[in-house]
Length: 136
Image 1 (cartoon, helix red, strand yellow):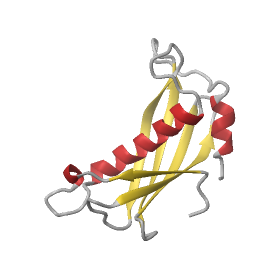
Image 2: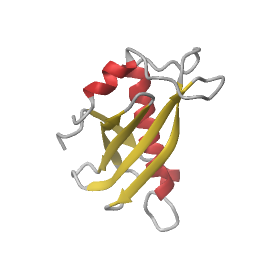
Image 3: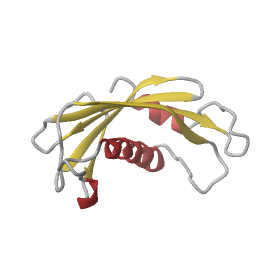
């Protein structure tokens, strides 16, 4: 679990459980997206209400390893697998409190101009902060 440079706990909610009694697969993607964007806002200077670039998800993937159910808390590890000019591919590990690996995911953002939606280079300070998570 030490191979991730950032950790965040995400509590499950009652409504996250599906009819089969475990957290529905779509919730895993939401958890990954939440952790990545929390990190971008708190650590890398993403300004949701500003005029700067935004990250659009162009690809995501999840491999499920074990189930998780409400009221479990999911501990999410985050690292950067690839940092390009305008894109970044994150890797996440989702774990239960007992350290059981629940899922492994990837999530790719392309940073674009918020008006034109055309790719733009990842600027500072975001690039420096992302680089800290490369091969964390």
